[in-house]
Amino acid sequence: MSQPATATTPTYPHLSINAGGAPLIAGTTMKVVELVMAHQAHGWSPEELHFQFPHLSLGQIHAALGYYWDHKDELDADIDRRAKYAEQARREAGPSAIKAKLGRTSP
Image 1: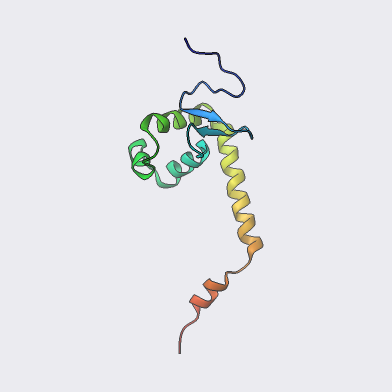
Image 2 (image 1 turned 30 degrees about the vertical axis):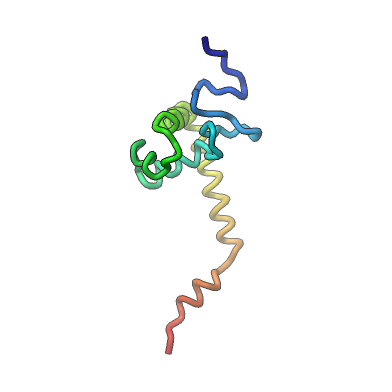
């Protein structure tokens, strides 16, 4: 008999919630949103995600994708927040010295 879901126990058997409230793939440190971002960025199927992340079972992958679709607005907001943070960090870091050096032509 299954236990009722609580604030820290999702109804997805392959997922858990970390101390910060983010859904994780159980037994790993991978956040659901990280798998979803790989799925969206590359258009990978669950089978391809399994190939790329062989430490995840297809059950874990399907549970994570199911969680995403059930909580799409919340996770899309997290993805947007992460993209904005990365863009801000790129702007604040300024020009890359290595990129500038590689861009020079040699005599």
